[in-house]
Length: 421
Image 1 (cartoon, one colour):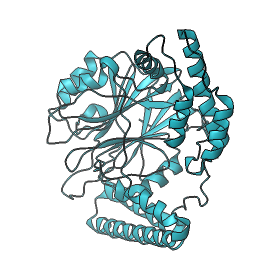
Image 2 (cartoon, rainbow, N blue to C red):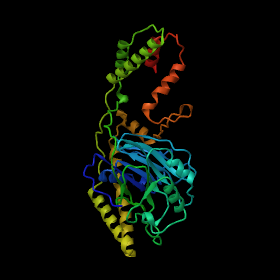
Image 3 (tube, rainbow, N blue to C red):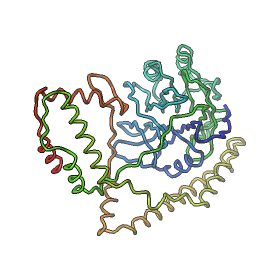
Image 4 (cartoon, rainbow, N blue to C red):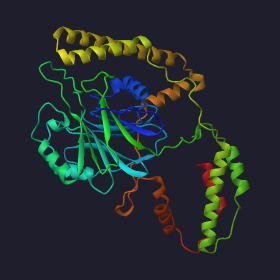
């Protein structure tokens, strides 16, 4: 498939899928690729991340890490795209991460998937991913080849995938040109990363892009659908909250001992108390500070070297000249060395600006050793709730069960507890 030109960048959703073969060592190249091509959602496979490793980018990251080394999937979402994570049933061999977005006014489930070549493809994993009535888009390296999606040859596991696609009315897309450049010179470039859609309102258009250093080239996925986007809200900077001012505002807005003798009075007081806490917090907390020093771009000399390496790699993919392959390898090592030196220089400059007296050194140490703690969906009574707007009602029911109907609440005690916590 050939990608169409996007004249309205802010309205049409652009995705990308990429087998990173270890994403931490290519973080700068990945960020440069996402900014250069205007990618809204990036589906990654073979991230090689584990639960104790942080992966920081100025975008939203949803990860599914392996318990052992290797594998792993992730979805990177540009801030402002309205979405939420979606739980996936337990999979046997397939690895996947899922989110839900709105495309053309309808909810769509998007999955980043990976299947190791040493594991079989089974129908139960496919049914778990495509289950439900919601439109689905799956992209990733499934190590499944067939000439119908422009692979060089067909493999045995493709029959199960084709049968499942025919039964469930799914469409399978592949790039027109090979996007894998194996490290082994005896292997031939091929098409491994594919896109599978179900009940999607419009087709997708795929284009391979020589932008990053990996044996898999990233694949751009252009859609003709608009996404539901929103401006990121201003986040309060809780480290600078004036708690004395917060206590003063809270004491002025909350009565000391209101009389609560019926359910309506309790609900009214709870609403007033919640609103008073939020107003006091907003009046006492400044907004999040903007980044004082924006993230510096990759130097132009390194970008030129990367473009030269990508052009020569495309030429080698056609003519298969061993001399040209050696030049590509030398350029790849040169780009990697320059990127490492530039990152070390940036890190050294950052360390020189730290001042122990201003606690900047302590904040940097806390940031470096921080372990990400994902927020799983809440599951009351077996029902999984991922969207934030669906959680308050069951939570309110849970709170109501903890109070008797005629209980009298002394808000002065609650206020003192909040003040000391």
